[in-house]
Length: 388
Ligand code: FAD
Ligand code: UDP
Image 1 (spheres, rainbow, N blue to C red):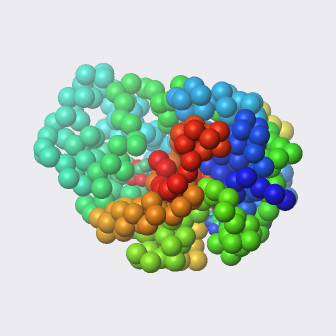
Image 2: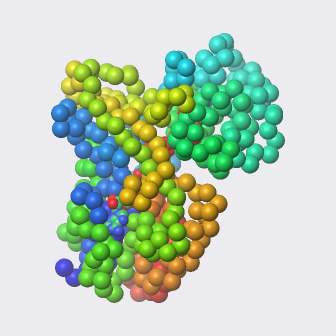
Image 3: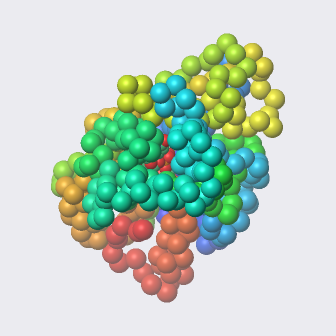
């Protein structure tokens, strides 16, 4: 087919670019996907034995405060009323996460008012004044006792790195509340796609001007597929440049999925395990993401999640972002600027941890700021670059 734009990668970033360019700008878009299916890491499929929807690359919860993204998503799917809540097991007891007044009362074994809890935690947190790493930041937020129970072991397992060597920002993702609000996310909009993630992603790709080729690595076919056509590349930035500046560090996950002969394994979608001697970080039980669905009452699907550093053949899931990584990233960004007509986007293309709503928002802004001006003749794409 004659194409106007090539998109490498069919995750939320690539599909949003493809959909907008085909439907709004009238372009013919070729989407190349390395894997055997579309959707990137948000892909899900029914477990063959039970029919329970399993998120193959880890549980995905949709949440956003960005109205434009929410309205855009709602063109392709409706959402259930699911609200994410997480529990954490520590030394044989179960607590609510993120740390809230309920967690504090349960952990210290008595009732606290919000002011009493604040005063208690402020006393524990006073030992740190200028936090410069994850451990110090966490202690400055929740104090040492709660840090040692709920954060130290979990973080060490998740990052396979001493929390004193991790950047402080990682922990600021996790709120601390002095109320009994136990919701995981603070966003305005939240829910799970009623018909599942794959149905949503397929609807985005379902346009007569979009052609998707799976099992096709863009880097293997780029000259044939792209010619002089602009490219949006959402694969790993270092791989695009043949790792010329060294490998960017990623964390990968190993998932152990099992069908258990019970209608309910753990009574909740996600149970974290804070103890360092439990080898997995958390257990997902997929049926609980969709209580509105009819699933078998005698079987359930669970998935244990283990975390480790990624080698080259592994799925890159979370950017590790050490100082050495950040220096390499700058070098790759410089190379990217010199790539004529190639825009780099998405989680892998920018080496950034992006939630789904952030990937969609980033893609919409790439269309607004780069692709629309180029294709409507207002500003040609003479240089490439990493788009954040
Ligand atoms: P991806 O989904 O990674 O898609 C990139 C695609 O490009 C992949 O399909 C890949 O195969 C393909 N590709 C790579 N290289 C090439 C190439 N050379 N040629 C062709 N194709 C190529 N977000 C949330 O909002 N909520 C959550 O609860 C949540 N949970 C997550 C849990 C885990 C374990 C992980 C890893 C991520 C989670 N996310 C979550 C983030 C979410 O997965 C991302 O925001 C989203 O996948 C980003 O989309 P993307 O298109 O940038 O990247
Ligand atoms: N975290 C923790 N204990 C928990 C949950 C999270 O210490 O029970 C820390 C951990 O360092 C993690 C960070 O908080 O990397 C962010 O957690 P989040 O659940 O957002 O991580 P994700 O779901 O993206 O893996």
